[in-house]
Length: 279
Image (cartoon, rainbow, N blue to C red):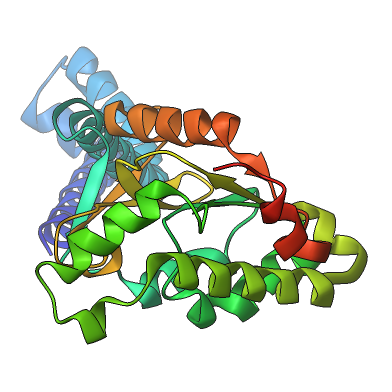
């Protein structure tokens, strides 16, 4: 609104100046100027020059207005870059906090995945919700998917069972080892459906106390903790943007460490494969 008023005011002022220059030129041709200002040649020349410049500016107003738009866009970019720097410096890369795992958000990220998906969990309670998105990411966009699951026979699985059942109804707690096996069975099913593209789906089991649960898509992380009495997906989720941010670096380091100590699962025979791994 303010820019429009200024634009109209500039055009009116330039038009008046141009008309004044034309009036001076006509007055000079008719000899009126000499009567009003005898011998005033210099002022007349000056007025003629100003009239010419004014006419030029009048024709260039639209182009000058474009420069205003460019400045506005540059100012916007500066604000965005400052906001990004502040986010990385003061919030460690955290851009949002979710009260529980945001299935819709994660599904949308999977649909747009281009490079890598990585999941670190004891088991994946909500795997069934993302089967189609995972399959499409692998098959259609050649995305690499790496999944870390707790070894079903690990002593840590029994400890997690206790942490869940001690503060929840045992009927709701479930069995961590059995749940991990069900998850591996579902991943084997996805692997079979993928055919030759199945090589991009890698699964490893680990025998270690997990510090965090992580769902990663490209440079975006959803991070939660293993609290007593509730599943990680029911805990508060920190959404982190960028593997180079303070929190992103720590989360990625944890993923890399557990991936190194994990053991590959042959999804063609996952039961025999994990049976050969000593937890």
